[in-house]
Length: 270
Image (cartoon, rainbow, N blue to C red; front, top):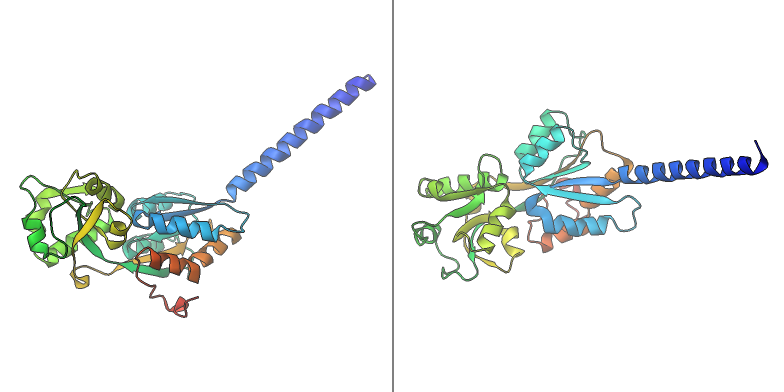
């Protein structure tokens, strides 16, 4: 082989090796991303928490939002989530029974309450009795709410309506949605006259207002929990998880209307 051909061959090999290493490095960095699966009702708060917890970290944090049930089933089917934030303890139980969670990482984050909302242009008064609010709904009106069979917010709504003896009146008018934010969107668009959502969902929108509230004892406690997912609990994931259990995250949750955590581990406000 002539010297110039030798040099070209060496250069080509060097370029190939460099490209291979660069590609491998890029793929490695992509694989290091910490994926957080969170209940749709936590969207705004978790996005703010991700910004705080991602500050100064080399590993990117990506968040995906949907109904807690949908996310739990995806995790059970092998989704690469590292952290799971659920709006219902039953779906944490579901994953724990299937050995999908890292032992002793399950923690309570916060609580919430349930309210009835109407479009901001609605003539309904605020602070009305629940029975009065639903009685004032047009005959062909619908009530937007999460699907009681699959969505935690819908499950709580059905339980609350049963408690106040309104479910039989409402069940045929329920506009069931895939998650609580979808129910919020229907009311924002004035596509329905009423919706049942978490109090925190009502707070993020200027297009709706709260017209009634359900008593806290009318439904099971609305408890948000967090846990690490088995098989994806890398050092980066653990750092993100600890951050999400810390003081800054708790303050963000409070600013977004969530109740303080009842987890004794962080009772000192860490």
